[in-house]
Length: 439
Image (cartoon, rainbow, N blue to C red; front, top):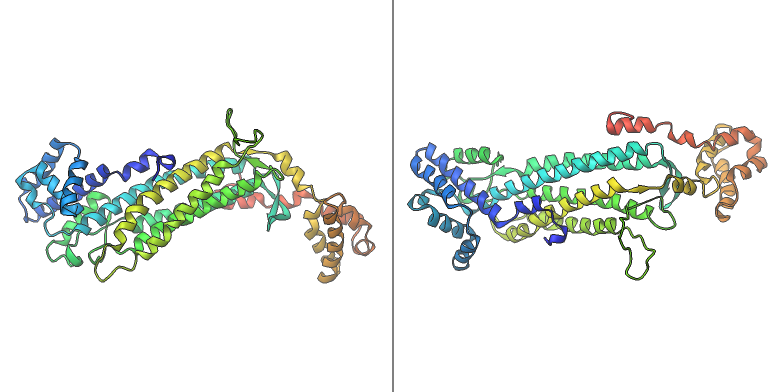
């Protein structure tokens, strides 16, 4: 992943140094378990840890040089460990296959990545909740198909985003549990040359659960679900980013990204204040979703194992998690500093001459004995006059002047259907559902 869209804690999970450290721990813990079973000498198992502590960090360049000759990454690593350890290194990798190391390592990396992403979501949820409560009763227009529909509040928009990301958090918790499994089962997964106790031992030491049945690899449906979950979270990021982008359009301008002192919007037009962060988030979301299909296609491997999934995962493991980590942090910053314009929201809400109250008049007419078809016709014919006047006419005044409407409803009854507060009477109920409290 390019540095521009990377944050250090997540990137650190995917460095060669981190990968080789995890490989070593898997191998050394497995050797400890074999020592407990009496398969290898306990002194040899202890020596492996001691030699590693004395040797310090792994020499990545040396491992790469060995791999250039062996054409096998795990063998290259084990050769380097042997150089550092001495003759006791012969007890490493007893009864194991490369996939035991690679798949278990990937499970550790994805679990650690998920923990960072969960912390990212928690930070975003805190901001969304604070801003939602701040604007719980800030009136704004709800839109369907991009067209004015009925009044909502800006707080409700943010509460919806909170609920969506709260669901995403639960999905990621489940996906983390699903992918965090350990397989130390040997060639084709039969445990023929290694006791299942070793797998259980390594799983506990590495913070994983035991894979109930592996072939020579951990089944890739687990990974597919993990990356699909990242794709859903990316979709939610884009949904909220798109909302902000629309609200920042000049014709709307109900909210906008914070524009810092000295910031420039255009190399040609000094007046520009563009939604560059949310546009960036839209692009990053596309990238994360793009990794989902390869993960799904990795599920169908040949027989007990092939490596068609390997090259895919070397890309999508780091790139998807690093990108999503950056995107979640950026979205949190956008929402934290989002500039909201309640006056502009009110102006837009009232822009179309009261059209947003048309349904209430429709319902009132039906309750007064007018058929639904006639009620719709009466309201629509007046609403269309307001629409065509671009809000210059008043729907309330037109309806009050319409003899067919006046025959069913009094002037006060019509006027009472234009009360804005009516639309917000259940906001507290919705907030209590989302946050557990109305405040």
